[in-house]
Length: 201
Figure 1: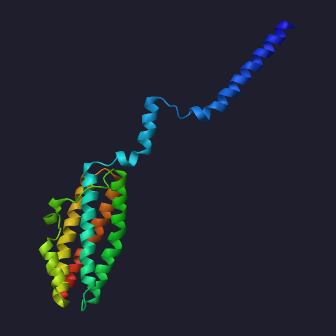
Figure 2 (figure 1 turned 180 degrees about the vertical axis):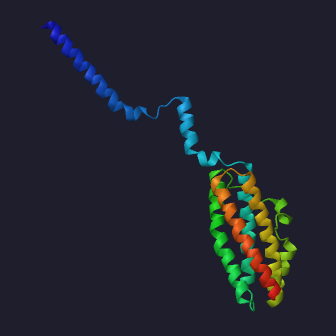
Figure 3 (figure 1 turned 60 degrees about the horizontal axis):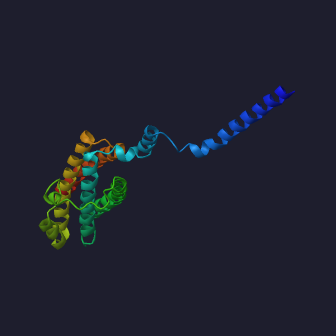
């Protein structure tokens, strides 16, 4: 009888320990080994980790590039006597590039680059329009303004295509590469459209 009592007591104790262990699992789950913890952290930050220098250069540079395209579009849209097809093109550029700027802002924030300063070296590179030419666009009117806008935007788009192709070849961040492919396609199409509009002026 004493042996049976001891046996059942042992069983009861074992069951309590098992139940206690099961109940404690959710609380103990976060206490992973250093390797498991690093693996989990790496997974949650996989998008950030997968961005390389080319991705960061692309996002920061293309953001500036898009901002100037919108500035140029705003300038020409404020003018009178601009042909409707050119005004429509400027509006499309704004509509397409504004949300892309927001996307790149989010990426830069995720990568800890939200406070990144502008690149002075881009002022005369990658198709960026120099300040004196922006001034000329502001001062022009009518057909001359339309002509300047198209000429400047063709060069500007060609620079964007070059930047996007570099990202496609050298980047590692999937979303940035996808955006680059979209930019190559859409801006090459707009370059052809602008050349036709320019020839018709």
